[in-house]
Length: 322
Ligand SMILES: C[S@@+](CC[C@H](N)C(=O)[O-])C[C@H]1O[C@@H](n2cnc3c(N)ncnc32)[C@H](O)[C@@H]1O
Image (tube, rainbow, N blue to C red; front, side, top):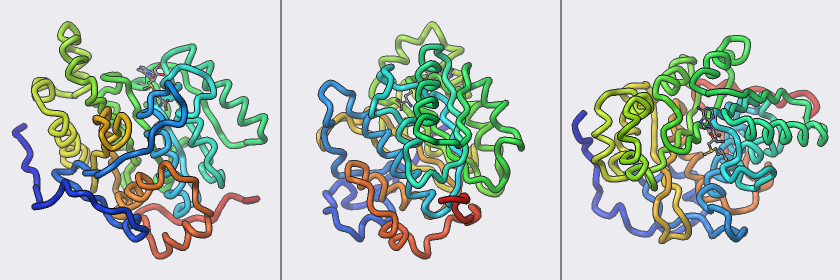
């Protein structure tokens, strides 16, 4: 694959001032990479990896906004144990998504390879049960690259089910064939993917992995891994954006930077958000901006999203009792 042309505008790096209208605008991008003038506030918790906290808030905000439109959803997390390997951590995405109110996501499938992490997920499920949460929460132990086949069945996910899948790998654990299976599963409107590319330590990890070329190739899904090995961070993000659109057929993919800390922080991850919904990048933009703020009252969000249609996702009423 050759290099990807970037549509560099005249002023793409300038600071854009925050204002309310911007929340429903599409993000500023260059070559499929979102350009953000500033990022999240610092962590309130000393010693916590702030990028972990940021990404879990972003996922929570986005899924929250999305279900305001769909009123339903299924959530898959392939690498679901807490990053800090500590129970009840506030930066844990699975925990945050389970806590979204109203509880319109009706099914969760949470997978992890590590038995200790599976134990933490089971504990989280028990906590939900103790709080009266009766939704389907399935904890799946094993390699997600294998488990994915048992998840993607018509009994679990129907064609019309709005479905999200978080692929928050540490480095190279998520094989490309797994991403392909998720992308190919639904035809009406593909499973929305949040795929993490850990550019902050990718170069170091790749040089350490020279003896595990097979693992790298399975992650990249092709033999030309050297393209990634020799690329700048932003170019790696663009390569993935291009592959999600061209090879996997997503209507839109964007790379969202997750910074270390503050506006000066370096990019630790790019989160590739792949979607078939034309308006979804606006929702993600809104979620990105709102991630460190308290959730808005639902009525306000619904008013803002009035007229907002997610192509392909059927609008359904809330579950009985909501
Ligand atoms: C970066 S952490 C996930 C962080 C989590 N999403 C959070 O919000 O805190 C990656 C997790 O993937 C798990 N893991 C590693 N390889 C895996 C595999 N092949 N299949 C499933 N889980 C795996 C690890 O045990 C670890 O819990």
